[in-house]
Length: 106
Image (cartoon, rainbow, N blue to C red; front, side):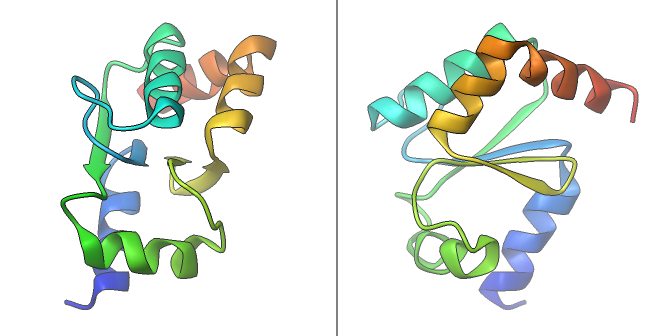
C-alpha cells in the first residue's frame, strides 16, 4: 500500500481524523493542542488522530494528498476542513459542533 493509499484509508476509515504533531494527551505543538481542545469542546468523542512526528512518510506526503501545506490537518467525513485557525473559527461559530454531531448519525 502506498503512503497516499494509507492516508486515504485513514481519512475514509474514520468520521473525524486529525493529522497532528503528537497525541491528544501529549500534543507537540500549540496548534495541534488548540485543535484537539476545540474538537473535544465541540463533542468529538470519536476523534482519530495520526501523530505525523512518528509517521515521516505521512508527514511528507499529506500536503500533496490534501493540497494543504500546514499541520494539523482536520478531516471530517472524508473532507478536508483545514488547520487550527479554521477549526477554531468553526468552533466559535458553533459550526464545528454541528459537523461533529452529524458524524455521530452517520
